[in-house]
Length: 75
Image (cartoon, rainbow, N blue to C red):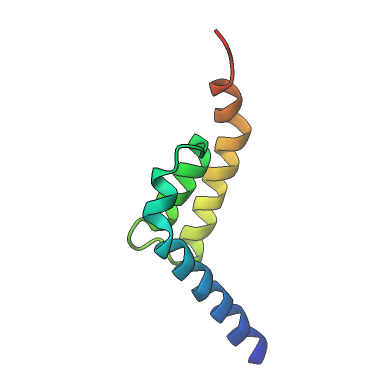
């Protein structure tokens, strides 16, 4: 019981911090496209459920593996 309360408190604080810093994160010019997409996914209304957070992280992983290498090409 105590462990789940600590975990839920940590997740709540993390989500609050992401929400508070959201507009500044999305406007940062130094962020790569995958980081901007991850921040936008976390800040979308209703994406605070565990399966939505997992989907955001999976999308970020996909972007880092397959999309960013294609963006770095000099064609």
